[in-house]
Length: 258
Image (cartoon, rainbow, N blue to C red; front, side):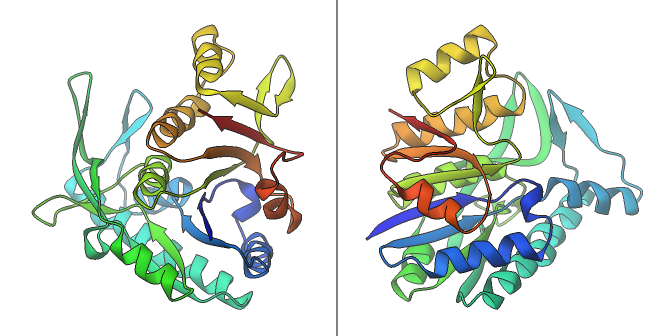
């Protein structure tokens, strides 16, 4: 039985329809067990703005204060997580709502980069996947918020791409999927159907891969180095998307392999 970690993203999942069709596609699978990880940047920004919080960014990363983390956790682990599970349940899936704090799924330490302090933003240092393994053994679909905690139980926000990659390693999954607003990685104006880690790193050095795609690639490199078979960057385009991803030679999206 194969396992697949799906990081939800893109405009296709801004309403019920995207999740409902995803749920129908996942329910039809007979030999793959899915796990879903989500973020929620836009809704976090809206909630912080409503609370008159003014975000600060360093090198593109949001600094999260003690006051902010309470709002961020409410948005991710309650509002968004609950809504996604409800939409998938309407399609017939049995879901289990979890976060990185559930049974210490993710253990984190504060993120420090180039001497900068990002407040309550964490970096995953350990994965304890027992809660996920247990859910899958009961044919439940885990729906995971990336909010995690340190040794003392203090909540931290974690980048959802990084959380998906760490989880993929932790459960030794076969397929790691990032749904985005683009149909794959563009090289010279065309979608590249496949590339190795070395090729992807060279495209980054050349500036062909840039912006937010670099962070996704970096998390994918970690996942592949940790034993994940292959990773996909693709766009949700209906129920046939999952079947295409699982094909040995998918017709759409970009596959990254070791």
